[in-house]
Length: 51
Length: 448
Image (cartoon, rainbow over all chains, first blue to last red; front, side, top):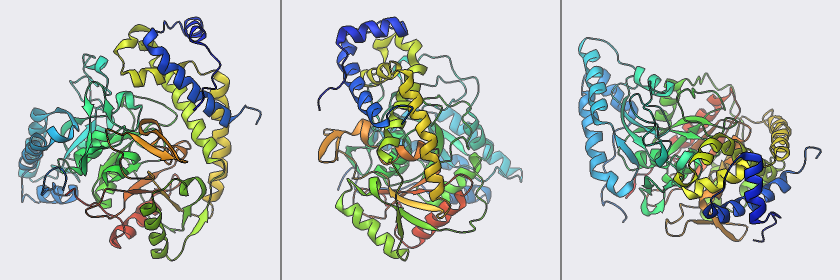
């Protein structure tokens, strides 16, 4: 499965820090990236509030 | 032949209670037998996280004292049972399957469900294994081990209430309690060949149950017969009433895709037995499942964010990475999922104007192997831990009551169905389940 999530590892780390005050350990990144991709697919299926 | 050659099952809960209430046999003897069976069998299964021997013997003696004094200990008199390790048990830390909670402060009181079971005379014997924080369908736990399926110990028991299912299917206990957020009672019930109840959302007490996703969390029992399941449900607070009608249909579309041939044939046979069923379809089930997935990730991530900040490396990595991603989900996606839930609920409610029970499969195939934890969906192999609930998740998304029933398949690996109802009309679910069991189409088959 291709990874449709556009965030780089650096962007994931920075977003987690800025929005959640969460320091993401490097060993979490592969799993978090994969899960973000999965959530992005589900979000695409659900659509927007206007749908 | 798998596991042990001849399995001796525990007596049914109803039969135990009748024997104890009549004074024919002591609660103490049933508790001692349950403890002995756990000691003999759980090494191969891995269902039990804590054996509560002292508490069980104390509770059993109290039940016997009531009987000796001419009293009635209640409808579950002397019935040994266990709880998923997320129910508060007074004096013990509630681990929720997490290593980091082994040293949590002990619960100051029993969960309300445990209190109700005790008030009905049941005897708490054990806490039971689960996926960490109930986030998974496998009961593969980095800290407490993997729970094995009693029908084939090389296979998954399902999850997240896998310990609760395996303890009953292996004959160690006649009744257990679990929790179901997206399928965590129904999936292990199907894979272990048991009855399991996911009640209407919010209808059974959640006080003292470690939460996962408030929008979907419920508790419910596992049992080997519909009579025992109903007994436990009523003790927990379920009100059955009478079934005015039992209009049955089968769910098509999403619920007929990706099924093993033997499951499709079994549903067709059941259809014939019931005189030919109409097929109905829920609209946009894939969207409902995705919306449930998003809400679960977001609410679970938000709940655990403080500990993810404080000690991320103490989580089971598989759970942690899902929770972290969920915490990062942008709010508009959560709100869109929540909004779609009301659209989906309205469409499904319209179907229940014409039907009382809808029949659907529970899991599309038999339990996956532990060394190959994948299932097949649309021709692709996908991880069982995240996908075993694809047929259960759209139903709990809108809080429907569901009874998981096992197809009667002696000597074969279990397959299960969901009898899906609507809140307030649970009596129709039990009436159909009783009819199917009496007709020999559904029922528990002990492991061989």
